[in-house]
Image 1 (spheres, helix red, strand yellow):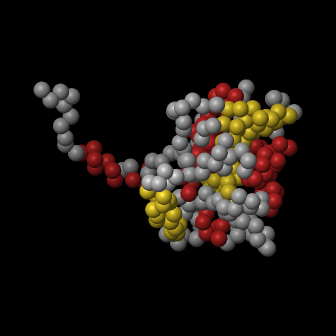
Image 2 (cartoon, rainbow, N blue to C red):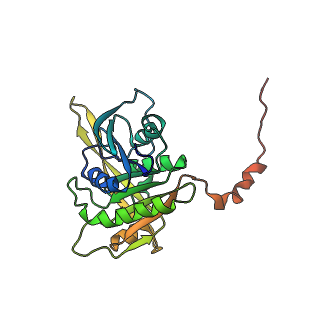
Image 3 (tube, rainbow, N blue to C red):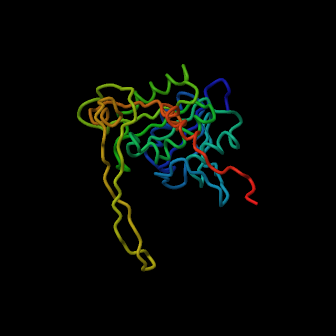
Length: 266
């Protein structure tokens, strides 16, 4: 690999054949040396999961000047981990994940394998961006994203991100009107309300199929979900520290609890 150009690691959670991945790869190749490590099957909603058993493998499927592509049997986070710990000869300058088929705004970020991969890189001090499109169609139109993805990526390559912060970027699906712009947002308060239905397995047993509805519970006007609904690109600075720092002092009351702390009870 040419060390004079940025090294960009590309991954996703929709599998190596996903249209969104192919779009992202095509946009990254002019910007630097590109290594793709993608999952061998769809891994949506895998979050930050990793593979402990069985063993992992990554198969090299394409080599061109300034470009390599691997297919991995693990999760999106596995793809990132084995990328810079095993396959690459240097730490990447940037990890980009996506373009996901479906929104990762609001609490979807918790479930998202796309964002799991970006957050994993962020945890190791690598600049990272997760890109998602608010459309679940496997044949979704991604062509309206080109300029925005390139502009955001160049900004990160040129100026970096704060330590411990990655970007969760979501795009509205294509419509007759262009984007209104980009908004820096906070993560919206919302939740999934699950609805399980019974179905028959291939062996004739009873199994459950997951369905449900996404319930928006916010009214702040500055959220990622609302930005998407209003045809804006949403950009949420995201970090992996889950500490509720504003509640640390009130929680000091737990330090005053009296309980038996003997190592041996006789």
